[in-house]
Amino acid sequence: MPLADSYLAVARVVGAHGVRGEIRCEILTDFPERLKTTSRLYSGDSHTLLVVERARLQGPGAILKIAGVDSRDDAQRLRGQTLSVPEAEAVPLSEGTFFWHQIIGLRVRTVDGQELGTVTEILQTGGNDVYVVRDERREVLVPAIKDVVKEIDLSARQISVELLEGLLP
Image (tube, rainbow, N blue to C red; front, side, top):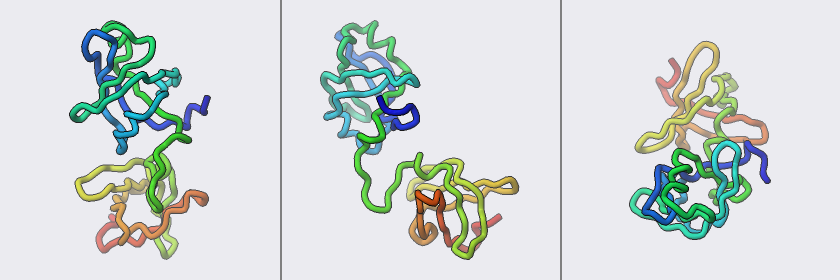
């Protein structure tokens, strides 16, 4: 079984669907189609193995049938659980694209060497993500766009940025 910190959340159980043990899920992945072909999911913090018998997308969510979950009561017991996949089974990303968990925790410095802090969270906006970069003195919001983010080096755990006028407090 993969290490506990090497899972990616793909869905959250929001309730039962019908009386035959199907579960209704909120989709948490940018790749919802993957749920239709995934045969194994891991539930909760303990990453309990769940075998997926069938899955379908329905509206903004998904309906899953899990082996051994055969009644509405069984399905309700899963309510609130986060469903994950091992990171090794993640959908491959295109070149220059990263998962959020890869970005959070990276040090950020300007192209001229000024340390800005560490990415502590990522905000989703309509047009682009925004990296929240903090150090002990300040918080800087860095738009995740090519004009600003010049390089992301996962091995060095660093992001190099060229800040636009007015981005520093």
